[in-house]
Length: 245
Image (cartoon, rainbow, N blue to C red; front, side, top):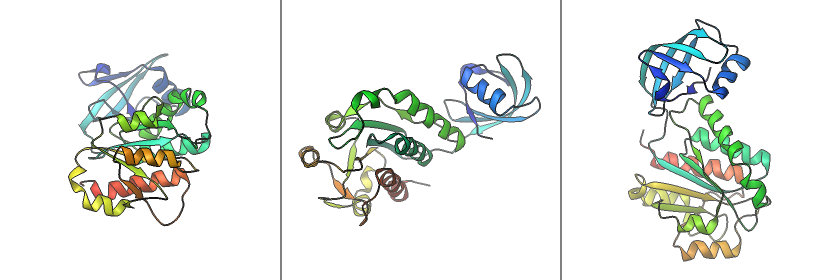
């Protein structure tokens, strides 16, 4: 069974009360949890609780804490993803896999070759957050990624919050992602943003923007990958090279 996210406000000594609609519906209506069953919960501080269900009412589930400990199911890296919005199925898969890989947040943006209209993408943020939340439960993450509001590429490039931004480009690259990571270990403790484009790749104008803002342009391999595959490969490479076990 996946674990479920709670807040410290739900905890009273060794009892935890689950009353939010989403968790209650999932546990009672979908999983049909019973009194006496074991339930794993985790709070916003990454504390994991092994609990036993002791009461189920019409609106709440009450559990008793059997054991608690700090979860280690999160990346040491402060890794974020910015990606050009894809068609529905590919976008949903991308969010799920990026969440499973441990990114702290995902910034969707509209690029020149994006096939999704801005108003459509802007209306999907809540749905994408739910997908990320569900994936976090399934892989037992100690935290949940934030799905940020829709940005423009310029807004992302001008954002000073990220110490290092890496643009993954299949053509006109400066170096490979592997070589860049191995030669710039000084950035591994910083806030890292990986930028991946749409199926059609970045436009010539967008590549010029990367150059104007001084971003490293990297290749993630000799093959031309689907955008969602490129995201998985890029994030996996960063984690492999820079994550401290």
